[in-house]
Image 1 (cartoon, rainbow, N blue to C red):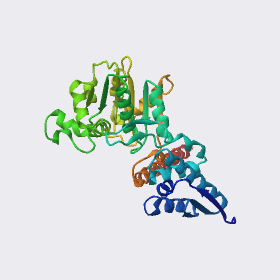
Image 2 (cartoon, rainbow, N blue to C red):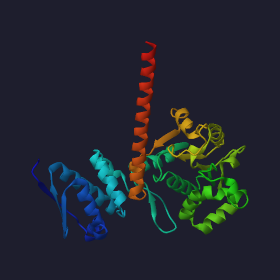
Image 3 (cartoon, one colour):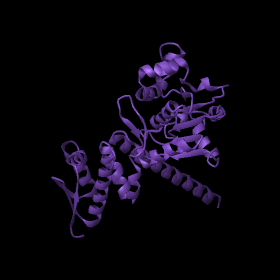
Image 4 (spheres, rainbow, N blue to C red):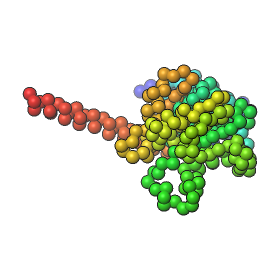
Length: 341
C-alpha cells in the first residue's frame, strides 16, 4: 500500500470555497467517498490527503469544479459526479471546455448550457449540420437542448418557425380512453415539448407565437404532405416512429431548415412486430454528409443521481440478458451439430 501524501490548493475567493463545499459540505463528502481521500477546507486552503493517485485525481476534480464556479456555474452533485468520472477516465483535459457557451436564457434568468462533453458535442453538431440525430437514455437533455437551440435560432431571426412533433404512441394507455377531442388526446404526449418552450419563452410569449403560426406543436401525423421551409423542426421520442413515418418526416425538410431527431432506443413502445424508424435511420444515414449522429451515455444524465444509477443498472441488465441469450443460442447450435454427428 502506498504512503499517504498531502496536497494543498489555495482558493482566491471565500464565495468560491462556499460554492465548492455545497450545503452542509455535501460536495466535499461526495469527493472523499469517490476518491477515498481526506479533504479539509480551512480559510482559503484545501488540504487533500490520501494515496498518491487518489490525491492527484481529487485535486484535478476540485480544480475542475473551481473552474466551473468561476464561469458562474452552480455546483450540484451532478457536476461532482461528472467531473469525477471524467478525471477517473483520464479526460481531465476536457474539463475547460465545459461551462463556456450559453445557448439562451430561460424566463427565470437561468442560462442554458451544455453540462457534459456529450451535450457539448450535440449542441455543436446542431449548429454545424442540417440534420442531427440525438440518441441516448432519459435525462441527457436531448429534447431540452434541441428546443433551446431552436429558440436561439428563432430569436436571432435565422428561421421564422419552430415546429415540434412526436408520435402519439401509447405506453400502456389507449388514446381512446383519454377524454376530449383529438387535440386533447394528443396533448399529454406533447407536454414535454410545451414545458421546454414555456421555460425558454414563457407561457404568454409562447401563446402569442403559436397564435401567429410561428410555433407549432403537433403529432407526427400532421406532418404528412408538407414541406417545411425556414424552420427548426424537432422530432421527439423518435424511437416510436415506424420506418415509414421516419422516411416521411425526413423528406419534409425544406430550404433553410434544420431537423433535430431525438430518441431512446431502449424505450421503444411500438408493438413487437414493428421495427423502429430511429434504429433504422441511424444505420441508413450514418455516412451522409451534413447529417450528424450523437450518442449519449449514462454519464450524460443531468437529472437526479438515481436516474443515472437506474439507466446504468438497466444497461447492465440488458447486457447480461444478451450474454445469456447468446450463450444459450450457441449451446443449442452446438447440441444440434453434435446430434447430427
